[in-house]
Image (cartoon, rainbow, N blue to C red; front, side, top):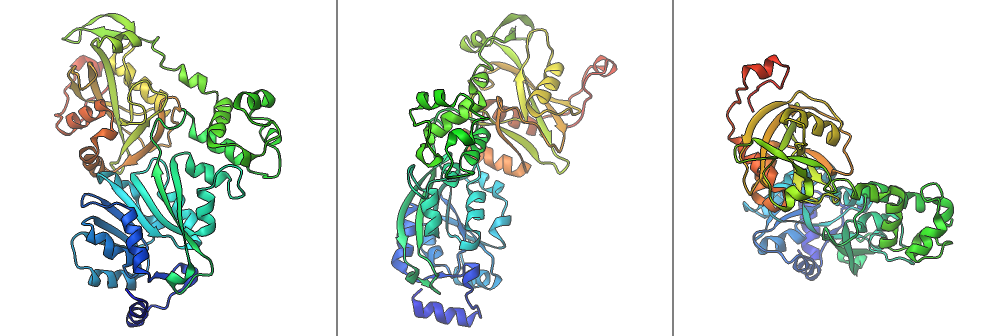
Length: 463
């Protein structure tokens, strides 16, 4: 829309722009077209647009053939957009973007986010929609210029700080261009800037514990003028040795260290070597034949290296609302790191049976005890990693104490989202989970031998 058209339309729908609520309407069509071109949209893309306003970006997004989910807080603007763009490829939600449930986006093959974030809640929206792990593959955001400089800042600059590192740990941020206030109606009091955010590759940075990293960074920037040796003396007592190893001045302040050095400091504080030695291949697993009869035991490395048949369990934990808890496997895992998996899972060790392993794995990985019931047994195949798998079901609402050596992140998801997600993005899941999920959906009620219940084993229950 041209400037005169925007002014007339706002009067017609009785909207008086409020700058404090971020109601600044873009009237530069060339800029709007440039923004959408930067997104490199194709018809298979699913675009989330925050604060579409009068549809300056929406118009060009629709021309690309992509589908759009537009979140608009002002009901009058939402109704206007529904009338202006009558197409099935546009869904408009009248609501607050801060209350939007991102979990449904995992069910879309590829998601991109575009938006002109209102200044007064821009930091909250940014942290919400970049919260790791995210289903979004690309962010193109108009922000207040000051914030854009902070999240994209490099070491040694005045804008570089804790927010820079917290965002850049998971994402690459590029400052694209400054946007003058004059392209908006009404014109804001400050200039804006356009940034592009993209996820880092899983192997782009050294292994690290994100929680320890965030803790160290926040502490290191808690008093910006102080030297790090004084701020981190508790977490890293051998400071001079750490500085020499990582190649920085022991008198350095927070803004002088790059992302890699901050990761290294967090690893020193978090003792990652202990995590790296977990699951090092020395555990003894039961080895079985084609009929799941035990023939012996062998170290983990030998079992996996030689594709020997062995045993494993998977546990699905549901909330009382019927949502399934999924874990994102730790980056320290030797197999399928950072892929989504069952609530808990593990191998049957020598001397254990399936039921004992299920109880143990639930306690070790989630830190809880729950009544578990057998659902279905999966045959040993290449898809299961040459494992015979017993799948169990239980109910627990948490909270859970996630084992950092096993789990990067965990979250409950609606079952219908999990089903669509596994079809849209199967590469994001561990193969064993995909096999268990398929088996779970088609499982019949398991009927255990009478002796199992009499001996206090797991009771049967429908899946």
